[in-house]
Length: 308
Ligand code: FAD
Image 1 (cartoon, rainbow, N blue to C red):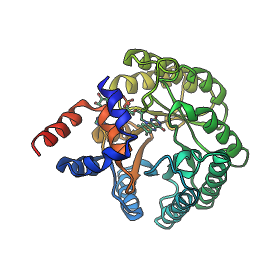
Image 2 (image 1 turned 45 degrees about the horizontal axis):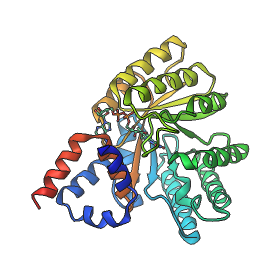
Image 3 (image 1 turned 60 degrees about the horizontal axis):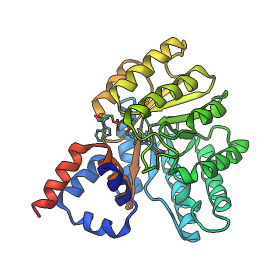
Image 4 (image 1 turned 60 degrees about the vertical axis):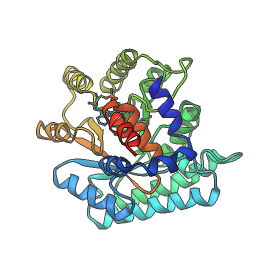
């Protein structure tokens, strides 16, 4: 219930102004977000790569309702990819993009605008020597996002997909996408979804995650297991061994600022670990989703609001 309210708040632009005034906000933002500028993201990526981690950089922002702005977001990604290349990081650093940020939510031909913009970003990534992963947003966008993925993969087969274990449809999507060369990030899912399409009980979500991980690790594709859940990390490791997966024929992924010691422990154990590094001015929705996942952070935040 509380999580659901928070996730609704993540989409409210009116609440954003109020949240920005709360003193602890800046501290929480800097824990989860690399900074507001491209240079901040490059610096954070450089530090992580120096520690043998790999990175996917996300320019924060979603639900663009303006065609010019959608184009500007794609341009910002192209600039970012040039910066990644110039910093000599392209073999370890890719980018993650939300299609709603590049036009998917626009009325009429939004899907086509998003496809065209994403195509430009994929070309820039190819030129730089790296890849793009399409983040997955709420369930109303899943079909459109997988359709755009399919189009992009005709020219850029290296484009990564994201599937959310909490959606009831996802096991079938895993089967469809578990093919040779297919890069698929599996996460639990971060949006406020109805019971008609998603498992709401956390245990059911965990069980679905394991079923999906079995399909992806048992297939010939390249699974990217995105979770901080210690139990799921352990189960993933056992499944990888069971399916005789060599280390680096799959990877773990975690968010910037979440369980950094565990990220390094997995690297020391010989695993590939990719850290999702967000940057940009538009941190509000991202921060509120992270608060919803972590009650301890939420209490810190509420205490600060109360003492204002
Ligand atoms: P949880 O059960 O939420 O957490 C397990 C444990 O991890 C917690 O007990 C705690 O110890 C730790 N933890 C989790 N979250 C936090 C936090 N915020 N702060 C501190 N500790 C924490 N979701 C989407 O819907 N679409 C996407 O495209 C997407 N991409 C993602 C990419 C990456 C690399 C990752 C790691 C996640 C992504 N997510 C995405 C978010 C994901 O769906 C979950 O909401 C998020 O990862 C929390 O789930 P969990 O598996 O970590 O398990």
